[in-house]
Image (cartoon, rainbow, N blue to C red; front, side, top):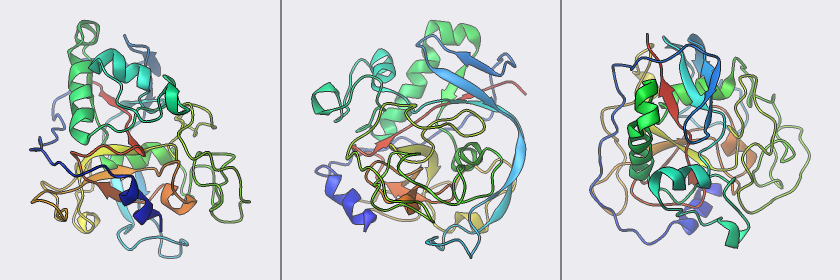
Length: 292
């Protein structure tokens, strides 16, 4: 059911030419600290290199068939935003705030940015990287790959959520009347929450489950897991599913949102949206690359 609710929130379709996502192969020099705050006040933490099992076991309740389990190795550490990009941070860099849940609609500057096209999220990363202070520090920003996103979300866990095998809306912002596992029903805010309102995972990241879906750099291919590289998979070269409106493909989103049932907030859950459309349930967080 939650898939249909997504479509109801989509605006009129006006697809523009898409820009290809570029995940840099070469990193810029960067310090090796555990965490830092950048020039616009964004907090990022260091995620260690390592390996994990991506996807979900066949025994996991309410899983989708495109969650095939497979080994993934993240060969180098990277920094990732502690929070989803906020409205205030987005406006500092982009000069505008397109969010639906601004102050007039029950949100505010500390709520996640939403209604941002995937292409605009890419542009934000480019502009942030181009700021003088960030260039001087050698920081290059981009969207996470799908594999990096799930690795960071799990933070070493193998359970359904980084919280465990159940999820209540006391621990994440989603449709609280549809919890997961043995969790009780809870509040349904019907909007975004201020970033950091819920507990962080073991690596210090907030809102990896719920609040807003998060854009990844990958094109969407439901069967990509079957042939993806073991080390640092970057997604397929192009999407394989076409939208109903134009010869256009979908981009991967992860994490679920305030609108969704808990099953869509699972660490392994994969979904997709059209990259040149804004949605009030989709935002993003950034990755900052560091030197080898």
